[in-house]
Image 1 (tube, protein in one colour):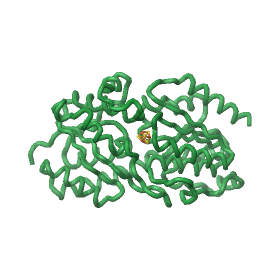
Image 2 (cartoon, helix red, strand yellow):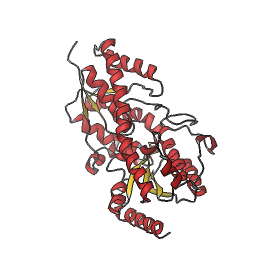
Image 3 (tube, protein in one colour):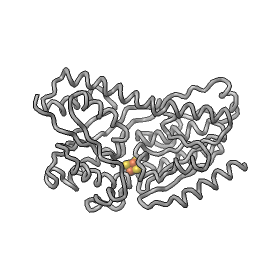
Image 4 (cartoon, helix red, strand yellow):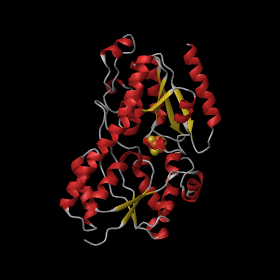
Length: 336
Ligand code: SF4
């Protein structure tokens, strides 16, 4: 087998979801991978010249700077797959599509930046479907086979990559379950910050989690409800009078978007938990799916007598006003 190329992976959008899978798959096939650095304002600004639309959401806009950063990182190719669907997660959710911006952005990057021509780096954007492991595997094989990787090696690497992705989710969820259960038992205020996987990007999330922690409350992510929460009988009894179980079956919208469905799942779960469990929803300016998901989550929480707190975030940092908003929310909850 010839020397394998070094693969550059942009730290953007769906990569916040699937990176453990790709890292493991490439490693076990023998590739070296380089991930673009964390987003900073200079990195974002370096790519703004090729952003095609001022109205596109900020998480998409930062992708351009990441491609330029990879071009300077000594890599041989850029790998940024088109991922139309994620793995299905919730019973009764209609589907698990990525929003058109997430799934289509590799194509936008190709046409707006043309990395192969303008940066001299081949840009690979194969279609990968995480909702169907058989198809995913065959697409992975098609991709690595062009570099001489055998089917036998790919098969083993694929198994490990799937396992790695599962392990990653468990590691993400288990400590959050522990904190949530303790907070329910001890009646401490806990906020579930619901957004998108790429809201983990420090320039995108505007430090909402940190601000909540600084204000003395627990802050968890919507991942906490991506695995069943084991509520003991004692904890269950402590909020026996709270909301009834809701479900994706009873929504007023089509629950077809994977990441936004996690926000609805969070609202459904928070609605069933005691008043000390609250939700804060992050909304990136220009987000298409949120234009109707916001109404749905608001309605679910309202019916449970809970606040629907939405923080609108974009490239303009406003930690002062976010802090003020959260502080007054916490004070009103503590005095209620
Ligand atoms: S779900 Fe919203 S924030 Fe995310 S990429 Fe799509 S439009 Fe942007």
